[in-house]
Amino acid sequence: MTSETQTPAPSNLKVVLAQLTPALRDIRVNLARMVQVMEQNTGADLVVFPELFLGGYTTRAPAEQAIDAQSPEIEQLCKLAARCDAAVIFGAAEHYEGGVANSAFCIDRHGRLAGVYRKTHLFGDELEAFVAGDELMIVELDGYRLGLMICFDLEFPEVARALSQAGAEALVTISANMPPFAKDHHLFAVARAIENTRPHVYVNQIGAGEIFEFTGGSMIVSVDGDCTTATDEREEAVTSLRLALSSCSEVRPDYLSLMRGPLGVRSA
Image 1 (cartoon, rainbow, N blue to C red):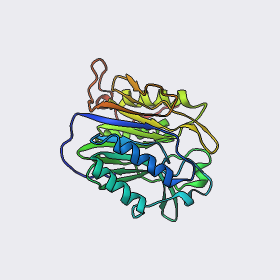
Image 2 (image 1 turned 90 degrees about the horizontal axis):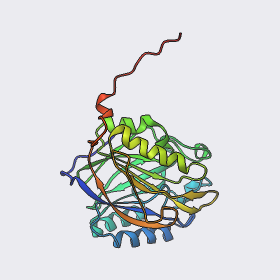
Image 3 (image 1 turned 90 degrees about the vertical axis):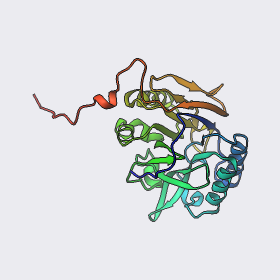
């Protein structure tokens, strides 16, 4: 895992969930949408866009939509974050190690690229289209430590547990989830928050994509499993919510601190 050290963070963050339908294979249009959302939410602590939002979700020739840290789109978004005084996390295909990664780019409110997480658990056709990342990541954005996941990562408890044990103060999942898995992700998003006593930001695409119909359901989950959602979680919505950086439940034990080490397994 990697991280950077910055200044102390507030304990209550203004987080903007951008549950949107990206234009397929049109970075220019999606970038303009990001500019609009950011400018309308100047001063937010964090704005979060879904998985592969910049070029739209596709597993067909994703290299055509891929960027890297030196791309002009990143330069523009860094300037935008600084101008809007807001950190941003968004999904994009990334040129990486001779292939393409399904990545989450993280830019702080000062306009610095703070980190890039590459999806470690690829789903379905992604296995042929993308190169899997080989490490988990905690990114520090203006002093608060966020453990990053992308869609299918959410379904493996070990990912969120490792991030929490390594010091993540909150979990952030960007997603492009489709039927029949809406109920799965709702369940997993809540479970990851409760079992790790870490609040969880979950942002999913909505509407028709290249092949799939995405299911929305973006939300913030408290450490007690309470969900705060958009006004209509089944439609496009840009929603500003509060995220309490609390790792203490009012009613539940601290499962993370009580977890025992690896136990042996005996065959009867």
